[in-house]
Image (cartoon, rainbow, N blue to C red):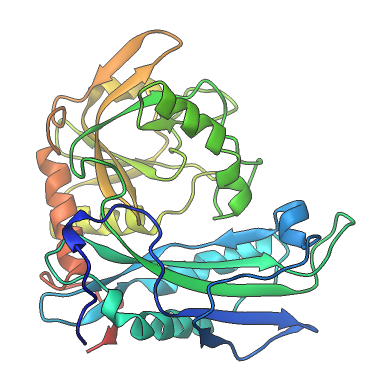
Length: 344
C-alpha cells in the first residue's frame, strides 16, 4: 500500500488523525462485536462514570514497517494481558484478550498507509483505551463501557531523540494511589501532571520517584521504567510492586541476557547506588530507551552524572537500543512470539 505524503522524519510525538479507529461497547453484561469507524468523536453523558470518577484505563503499543516491507506489532499479547489486569483493578469488564489483539490488527491494517516507512525513525503509535460511559452519580462502577483504539504516526518521545536528558528527584511521593502504580489508569497519569509540568518549568525533562515509605529506593518516572548499567557490565532495573510492569523493560532484560550475554539483576535499587552506575536510561513503548545524563536532587543540591552518557547514549545502552529496535524492525531474529505480523 502506498504511504501517506507525510514528512516522516520531522513529525513529533503528537496526535495526528488517521482514517479509522475501532469501537466496541459493553452493555447488559456483554460486549458487542465491535467495528471500525471513521468517526473520531466520542459522545457520552455529562454524568458518565469516566467524567465523574475517572473510571478509565489505557494501553500503548506500536506498529512498525520492517526491513522487508511487512507491518508488524511488538508483543501485543502482553498489552492485552496488562489491560485486563488494569480493568480488574478498576472493576471494569475485561475486554477479551484475543479480541484485543484482533482489534489491534484491524485498526492497523485499515490505517496501513499511516505506518511510517522503514528507516524513517517514526512509528505508528496505537492507543487502546476503555472508559465508563453511562451516567453514574453515586460512587460505584459504571454499568456500560466503551473500548476504543485509535492510531497516530509519531516521532521521538523526547526532543533531541537519543541525546541524554536530565531528571530530578521529585520532592513528592508518587502521586498514584497506593497499589495502582502497576496498572495503566488515566488517574495515575492525571495525578502526575502537576509534577511533570513543574519539572519542565524548572528545566528538567522528567521526575525520579522514590519509594513513598522510606524514600531511599528508586521506583520509576511518571511514564517510564529505569534501567542501569554497572561499571562491570551488569544490567540492573528496579523491582517494586508499585512499578508499572513495562513491556519494554521486560523485553530489554531478555535482550541483555540472551543477545548481549549480560548478567541481569531485577532488584531493589537504592538511591545511594546511583553514583556507582556507569549508565542510566528510561525505557518504555513511547521512548524505547532515552539515555539519562544527570540526576539532580534539588533538596540537597546533589548532582549525579553518569560517566557514560553525558553527551550521547552510553555504549551499552546503545547496544540494547539497537538490538531491541533491530528485533522490532525485522533486522534481527526475534524470540518466538514477540512479533505479530499484520500485513505481509
